[in-house]
Length: 108
Image 1 (cartoon, rainbow, N blue to C red):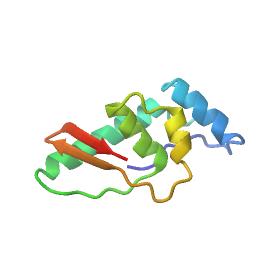
Image 2 (image 1 turned 60 degrees about the horizontal axis):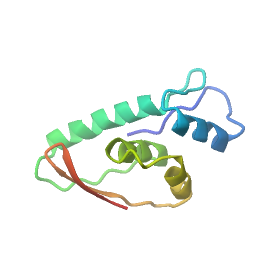
Image 3 (image 1 turned 180 degrees about the vertical axis):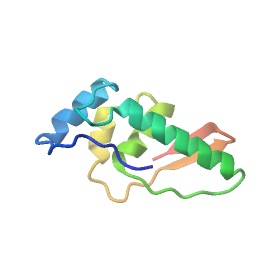
Image 4 (image 1 turned 45 degrees about the vertical axis):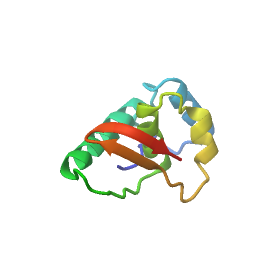
């Protein structure tokens, strides 16, 4: 569950680009990833982990944007403001409880 690729170039104003991406999940810089692409990639990986780990406790480490797009997948109200509030919290621990691939609860 790697972080998104923003661009091949240095991004001068990360906050501006991050906000644009959260406003439009399809927005991306040249040679970068959109949040939709990050979300799809990480949900696919999460579903693979869930299918391989039935009835087990699993710990996953990842980056803030990757984790935030996963939370947004299950809780669409998790948007830029929430992402911005957690981007300097290290570590930020989030607990997901699943039944199969169905989410039962998120705690953060």
